Every structure is written in structure tokens, then in C-alpha cells.
Length: 433
Ligand code: ACO
Image (cartoon, rainbow, N blue to C red; front, side, top):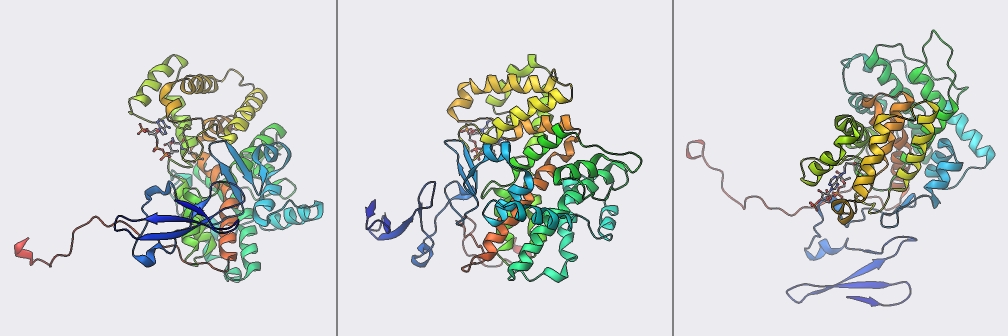
């Protein structure tokens, strides 16, 4: 039952089966559903039960807004489609981190600052040398980004706003360098130092694909495509990896260690690993003639359609629409208009979107359905797909971490549980078990 007290204060009343009534404040944000503030329920000996957080807002945030029913995504109020079309990744980074668009001077200062942090400590390369060459690059990312926490003792006071900003710039500058190193190491190629004459995305492609023996000229169509991928993946409110970063950070842990925990969470196929899984799935299907049979297998619950479905979007993921368009541009540029996997993806999407199984469950393509095809056309190997996601999402993680750390009422995050284990029992002697 909801009672209107005044324009500002509203309450929901919870009636228990023992007759008790508990009044809970209702809070409204600037956009999106209201929330019922239950944080004092514990004081009357009750917890709410919401495994996997289907209905739980874990924090307040000013960074990203999603309306999953309408298929909307805003960064700091700006629609993702506008940012993907008109902005560039570093501008989006500034926006996420600082809350507003930079003016020309702020933009160039931010770019300059970020570039001054693009190199990594020479000692860090030794961490890479400790990995097997065939290690998954996400395993390398978890280890090496976490290892950054051992390097920057001069900026470890997480209660100092300047140190927090410095940690953010260091992360933003160094993550692409580490990602490219993971790729080079895996293939036995020499590392390429960052080249500050390039833009952020050009420099990443340069560190990935240039060799010391040849000049490297970035292709503007591919740069724009990767720029879009970075923008689309930069933040996505309280998803699994971001919540992991916040949870780790809530204890006051080192920011690079927190981001490493986010990278670990991102790796799973239900989250950031989906673009790799989606491309593997397309390869496994192999031919348009097998799509119907594959979809039947999905409906029989033998496997999931990777790149489809989303916890929040119950409509087209707005990022997927941008990605599909980018896919056309990149394939054309690379002379791959007749790409078999792209044709297969389009056919699969068409069949799924018209099938009652997907319609009833409101399953639509997510950003990862097409991003794998774009990344592959750019020349990025499948096992680097989630790494690209991690490079792009680092700004979201660190912005969310910074927002949390800047709050005056910060508390360690500590969920409770519904205990369903054994009741109290006495320790049995070994010969009685
Ligand atoms: N293929 C087939 N069926 C699906 C799919 C799918 N991709 N996703 C959900 N379903 C079905 C489930 O089987 C379930 O059916 P049921 O009601 O008959 O049991 C129903 O839809 C609801 O599914 P849940 O698993 O409860 O939904 P949830 O919100 O927990 O899962 C998730 C979201 C993990 C993204 C899921 O849709 C999925 O596994 N998708 C494939 C992986 C993927 O693409 N992940 C990327 C997410 S986007 C990102 O991280 C950038």
C-alpha cells in the first residue's frame, strides 16, 4: 500500500502475517522507477531476499541511466546514439569521470594528461614474461592490471580526491598498453611502445598491429568503428563487473586491484565473454541452412543463443542497433560485404525476432551479437574480444569507483543471506561419523 504524505515524502507500508506494519520510504530518482528504501529493515530482524539482484538498487549513481523496456541508454543524460555518432571515446571518458562535457581547453588538457600516462613501468613487462604464451589474454589482464597496484605508491591515498583522479588517468592511459602487450606476448611479437602522435584509439590499433620494421598508418574507418565499440561499452550502470568493482572498493581496497576484480567478473560468457561466445556460435552454425535447426536446439534448451537477451533490456539493446550499422561500414571497407558470418547473423536475428520463444521472453540482440563480427573484420582475434571490452569498460569502472569513494556516507558493502543449511549440532567424535 502506498500513501502520499507530501510531494517530497512518500511511504510504502509492509504488512507482515503477524499483523506488524512497517513503513518504508519511497525514493524517486531523476529518471527510472522509484525505489523502496529497505535499509533499516534489518533493525526489526528482517531481510529482503533477492538473489541475483533482479529488483535491488545497490547504490545511487549519477553516471548512467538505462530504461530496459524502452531500450534507452544515457551517459550523464546524453543518449548513447548521439555520443556514438558525434563524440569520441576520450570525450566520453571525460564525461563519465567528471559529469559534464569538456570544453575545448579541458578536452585537450585531458588528452594530454592521459597520454602522459600511456607508458607502463618497464618492470611490468616481466609480469607478462611469467605467463605461458598460450594463456588466455583475459587471464593476463586480470594479473597485470592487478599488478599495477604494486607500482603506484605515490598515489595510494584513496581518500584524497587528487589521488583518485590520478589513479583514473593512470588506468585510462595504461590499460590499452597492457592489452596490446597481452596480444603481442601471446603471439611472440615485440611490444610496441605507445605513440602519442596518435589518438587514443589509433594508438591502441598501432600498439596491436604495428611492428618495429614497418610504418603504420591507421585506417580511419576501422578507427571510427573501434571508437564506437569503446563508446558503446564504456559504462552500463550496475552490471556484474561494475558491481564487483564497487563491492571490492567499498572495503577501501586499491583501485587497480578493484578493477582487476571487475575484469575477472567481465570474463564470464554471460557477461563480457558473450561477444567471443557469439562469434564461436556463428562459426559452429557455419551455414545459413543450419540456422533453423540451431534455433530449435535453443528452444529445446540445449544451449543459449549467445549475444541475445539481457537482464535489463527487454527491447532492442540501443547499442546493438549502432553496432549493426558499424558492421556494414567495416565489412564494406574490408571488402567483406559477402561475409558468411554476417549473413548468418542477420538470418539468425530475423528468425529469432519472429519466433514466439524469443518474443514471449522478450529476447533481443544485445551489443555483443554484432560486435564480434566487427572486431574480427578489424583483425582482432577472438580471444582478444573480451579484452577490448575490458579496455573500454575501464573508464566506467573507475568512474563508478570514484563516485562511490567521493560519497561522504560510504560504507562497506555486506549483503546478508537466507540460511538454509544445518541447524545447530554437536561436533561428533571421528569414530562416530
Ligand atoms: N537464448 C535462449 N534463451 C534465453 C537466452 C538466450 N540467450 N537468454 C535468456 N533465455 C531464456 C531463459 O532460458 C529463460 O527461459 P525460461 O523462462 O523458459 O526458463 C528466460 O529466457 C529468462 O532467462 P534468464 O536466464 O532468467 O534471464 P537473465 O536476466 O538471468 O539472463 C543473460 C540474462 C545472462 C544475459 C541471458 O539472456 C543470456 O545468457 N544471454 C546470452 C549471453 C549473452 O549474450 N550475454 C551478454 C549480455 S550483454 C553484456 O554483458 C554486454
